[in-house]
Amino acid sequence: MAQLTSRREDYSKWYNEIIIKANLAETSNVRGCMIIKPYGFAIWEKIQNILNKKFKNTGHDNIYFPLFIPKSLFSKEACHIDGFSQECAVVTHYRLKKKDNNIIIDPEAKLEEELIVRPTSETIIWHTYRRWIKSYRDLPILINQWANIIRWEMHTRLFLRTSECLWQEGHTAHTNKKEAVCEAKQMLNIYTNFIENYMAIPVIQGVKTAIERFAGAEETYCIEAIMQNGKALQIGTSHFLGQNFSKAFNVKFTNNKGYQEYVWGTSWGISTRLIGALIMIHSDDKGLVLPPKLAPIQTVIIPIFKNEEQLKRITKIVSNIKNILKENNISVFYDDRNIYTPGWKFNEYELKGVPIRINIGIKDLEKGMVEIVRRDNLNKQFVNYNYIGKIIPELLTIIQKNLFKKALERRNNFITKVDDYNEFKKILNEKGGFILAHWDGTSETEKKIKLDTKTTIRCIPLKKSKEKGKCIYSGKPSNQRVFFAKAY
Image (cartoon, one colour):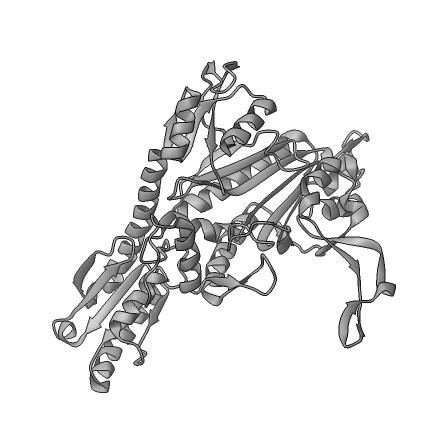
């Protein structure tokens, strides 16, 4: 099995090679779109299942809205159309026909109204809310949909930025501002809990600047993570929409005093970009490193044998081990294929990031022992197979915690406080990562820094105290440091 390109040699090439060679996904015939293969989709299914339970536990119901949005709806909220107009795919005709042995668009099949292929669903949902909401008794509405979206990206990268991606988008409607803000923050915390406790990725919670804010929102709450190469990645957002969409679509309710008010809203989402984050945060030059809570296969068992008789003896023991692991809710796969050598299989499962590998050979079996190999650090140990039911669950917990600890230490080493603009640029070029620096709060300064350094303000941190200082660029007064970084 061919080796991967080293991360230090070419990080981008290393990332793409892992996706292809670990059978997560591949490019498709449509520019910017990908085919998610079974192993990659199994990770997405785990993400879906866990988050789905969390959403339902907080009162949200799943729903589905159409993929197509009439252009007249999409253009009602001015900021929203400005934010997405460059990425929209538009359907103008509904039929093809054959002409001179070629397939062409039938010019007589032009749509009366052009349709936008969903880049996000706020417009069609708020148009629908107008029918659903009449009274305060109809509120709150707490819905979520698992869907695909189209954003016609010019520069694409598997999982991180594709023209089509899978995601979930939550949409809620409320009677008052306080409740809507609490909802937006609650969902940010749910994302944070999931990403840190299941994906083993430490994140920074923050608020986006006006320039980086979701189009049509009053406030965008976000979570940012740092990759191994020092670049930031936004991996979840939750938006307080205020009354912007309810005013655009004239969605009002009669309050308990008999007066009409505009509805308050939120929206929030994550996407298959999370899989890209998993790859870049934990993986190494041997391939994927998956946290146990999201690994499709948590334990793989590989027999080491010379003939069918030896394989039968090993398989008999493996049957008991599999039952014990399944009783502990641990997913296990027994790879008894005889067309590959054990060494080839070792490489395959290291590449696929399976957290634990159990090697069983005849000599070890005669001693009542098996070899356990951890994927996170490749440490090996021999244990009595009678203790597998105790050792493997404990080891999976240790691996999960170790991955988070390792990522947290790296993240903290990638945070640098800077008070001088020349030092700011030096750190960006030589170290990368998050730079905590003062900013004067103006969009003008933010744009100039971005133009000069290709760096953006990733977020204004939620958990940082006020601190007086001077903006690194303008020298004007500042009350708080913000996180700058180069980002995907």
